[in-house]
Image (cartoon, rainbow, N blue to C red):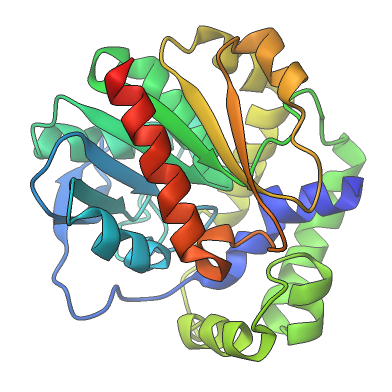
Amino acid sequence: MKNRFFFITILLPAIFIITSCGNETPITATSDDGVTIAFSSKGKGKPAVIFVHGWTNPRTIWDDQMEQFSEKYRAVAIDLAGSGESGNNRSEWTMNAFSNDVIAVIDKLKLDEVVLVGFSMGAAVVVETANQIPGKVKGVVIVDNMQNPERKLPPQMIPVVDSMMMDLLNNMSNEKLVAMGFYKTNQEANFERVLSLYPENVSQVGWQESLHGNIKWMNENCIESLQQLQVPLHAINSDMEPTEVEIFKKYVPGFKAKIIAGVGHLVFWEKPGEFQRLLDESIQEFITQ
């Protein structure tokens, strides 16, 4: 189970990389280090729901949620630097740098009331974002990540993770994805969906650096960042491993966990209806507090 944590939070999202984001022309903002950040925005309601992908994912992993939540809220999906249609001319691949990507989009859209939703590595990004602009954030939802914020990745595991990442990217199979916990249901369809999102010859600029940035954040900054939160924090996780609610509450007293049973890491792919219901429930709790 410990190895699964390393795969899920760091390694697994690598396979969801695409070179474009469908037929929609992205809007762009400029992060504080000059990187162009692509994003999509749909709907007009408040609060704006900002969807942040995991490590190397594109924003299109959130397509179902963009359609659903734009009916009621303004829905925004972002390509972080190095992913999707965003630039990769970055020198510091930290969680704080990625949070500046999110802030650039919020500023570009002149949003003053947002809910931040972060999947996998995106969980660290949205926590850092909330700590930078607490006055604009109604709440944070982390998705299948940080089940135990006190868990650390030993230094000797870093090269192991690097090696396994490259093996998965270069020798992808349904068997590996299932064994590593990506998904449990509709395996053939989900594998085909993964393959359809995975292009050849994609630039890998910043990938290893951001991998290490995520590890560093988990090992050195996670607990302090959680303690600094001034806004509510909820989690929507799979039941593949326990979410340590009492450990979270040591650092974020009002923390809530909502668990989706019988799914893998991609909770919003496998049970989108239940995920959307739980996320909307959290949004309503944030805005009525």
